Length: 301
Image (tube, rainbow, N blue to C red; front, side, top):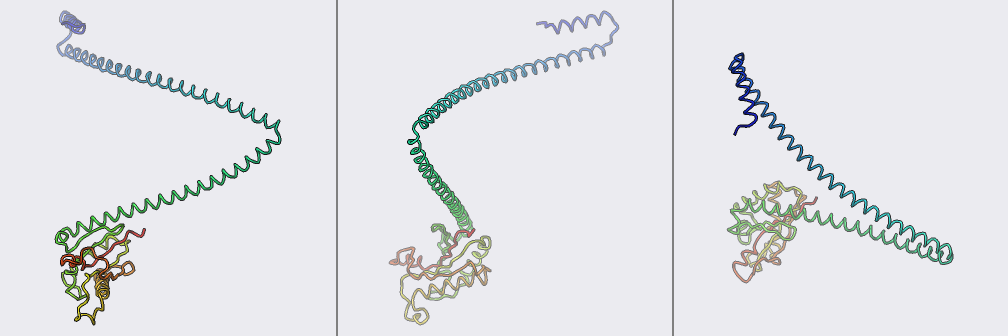
């Protein structure tokens, strides 16, 4: 199909050929210019089409804005009518009050009482709001503490992942606190409070981890099973309380003196046989109950 552009090109070619005054190079240059002009024309048409679409979008937005303005105008008209009704009712009330002076005084007194009651109610409401804001802040702090403790638990669990399956070291959460439980078997010989070399290795590792959590209070708790102190040890330990106390204190001193834990943030407690985590009627249960718990409390700030 021969387009108008092709006709123009053929005509121009014929004229140039007949005239014989235009060279091939000039002809190709003219053809190239014509091609460039056609491309510019196509680009312009594309831009015009895009501008038309943009204009259509703007017209649509203007239409939507007009509709919104009409709705707002209707709302304003209704609000004005409502205001006029209220003004009319207020005028009627003032008229009645002017004719009923005595009743007006009574109404003023009642209004004063109601106003006083309203102010008291607002005062109580503000107090409740302050209390609620305080409770929300406490809840936020509590959630932050729990979140930090959970992160601490995950960190400790990762550090002792090799020891956990054997039960030598276990990590747990008790309420807000994170607890590192060490079996007495790796820390002490039977009836002794002297720390074994295998136990010192784990305590050094724990000390290094604690250096990353300097804002937490620590408590070392000594636990035993319910077997009474034997006759050969009775002169040294009167009961399981003394044994658990000595073991907890020995662990505390090791963490402070060897592990460089700040003594101001660590304490020891003797629990004896009275905080079991397993049944003392079985051998395995007694073994679990003979332990040292190192409790990390939530951050102080």
